[in-house]
Length: 125
Image (cartoon, rainbow, N blue to C red; front, side):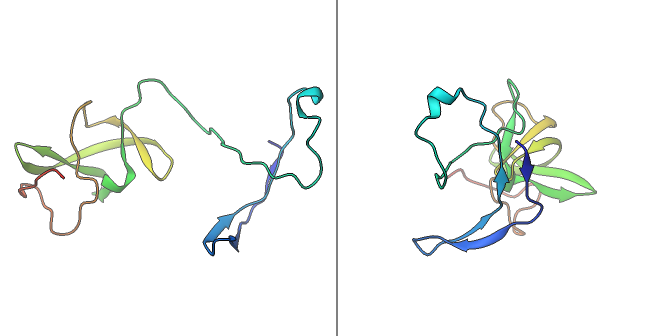
């Protein structure tokens, strides 16, 4: 990638959806023969991998909330929400890497609101 412009802009799609966009200038590294039909004005849909890891424990970003300057989630144990402090690593806005505080298989409350406190009875949906 050569340049990601420093500011984005809003564009209304052909379906009337408001989209946030940013221009990116990238170099194509594939051999010329494999892209002979590509010319000026072609659209490119791309997926950018900024980070990846193996055996990463993740939670929905919506399950995280701030507590005492750090992060916490509500873990479901014996039908009750239990507040659990977690250490968060990488996040993409949809999911977050959990470095400590949870184990594989733990069930978390995806969208906790103000009505949920430590010990609140919860039922899975």
